[in-house]
Image (cartoon, rainbow, N blue to C red; front, side):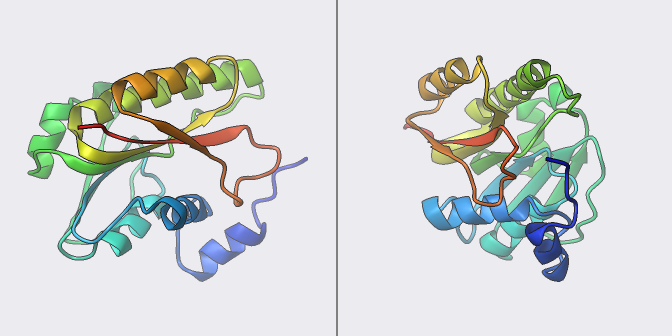
Length: 195
């Protein structure tokens, strides 16, 4: 099925002034699992174009903080939004906390995805590689009981990734939002850090 940039969720995002349709994935997950609350500190990995960060800012309110990280710029201007334009693999978790003036985060979100090539297996492994990096960062910066929510493409390495999240963060839930395109192999993994 060909990609349709003007589908229902894309139109809705434009009407509601979000940069991308992906906002409905985090919104649905948040409504179901209560990921975000007022006053929280949230790390958004792979933040561009900014829909997840914008939604997180709405949820955490003026006393919360959202830190976005991406190679591409994010156009959000808010006093409680910090953006770091850098490669996730060069990101030092301790320096990240220092730059954001926080000791830890209540939630680490990742909607990172590789540039897809059409090679489903290769795209899957690149997706898992990004998700593992998000996991490494989350393990170091997440508060006890904090939320880790990450996108990954399903495939042969997916069960191993889920096992790793269980060991390093805590019990796992799998989530596929209604706004995910039917042809997509993306799935989200949710875990709360055990104390």
